[in-house]
Length: 369
Image (cartoon, rainbow, N blue to C red; front, side):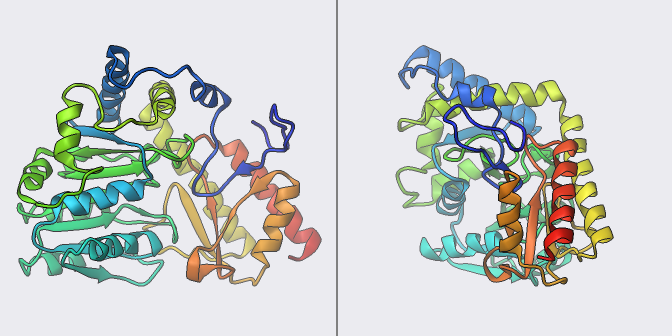
């Protein structure tokens, strides 16, 4: 839907340039209104198996796929509950990577952090130093830190983790999955999870993950895995093309269709589109005098975070953009008004980004916001 357009309900729609929820195509929204089916019916299993095979293709993996009617945070908790037997190491570099650590402590797990300043990346050297102690049987890692616009060096860190075969490698790919290539099997990722309202461009309320046999073996040894997110219960039902509890079938219809659209675009084309949009925003920031908040060399292809070094009123800018039926993100948490974020993920195109940046330039010139 173009900026300034109106929905069938007559309400103006703001095009979302925020890092979730993101834009959802009308064709996908239509899938959400299909007639429900029984979640123990054969046609449900066909839908389940269709989605799981497509997600395996998307993630370059043969690992088990689980579907969850929850946010991605639910699957983060699932990973902690199922895969941490001894002690986990949480690599933190911003608000959402810090969530791993909070979840671990809230579930009574032994946990430490390896932390860097917000805007910096978790380097393989830092993680190697911590893992070499032998204290940890799990590493919780955030691929794309949404709060700071940092993409951590997943491929380099994966090589480090391979040195420690007893460590379960869990990756939050919430704001990168389907926007950036993630070769799960090549990387040796044991848990790779994402919410669907980011690069996958569906409405929020559903999440997906791949789980390795190594992680499933660990779950067999871990007591008190919980009920809703028990990997062994999920595995038992997945073998039948089902979920243990009633899932959001509308989300599944939409996800199945969206995966078809992703493959029709072509994975490499999709990754390149995200990279091109990121380059456009970075170039604009440089020309406009805004400093990138994220460390050079580790800047995200799905969301850009700029320092508010020019002292603009970000909330006021967003109010003006709302008149153009557009919305960007203020800085998250401690970065509110100190930074701002522009997402370039999912259904957005370079044309959309160009229109947004032109509007921001016009507003800043006109209002001095």
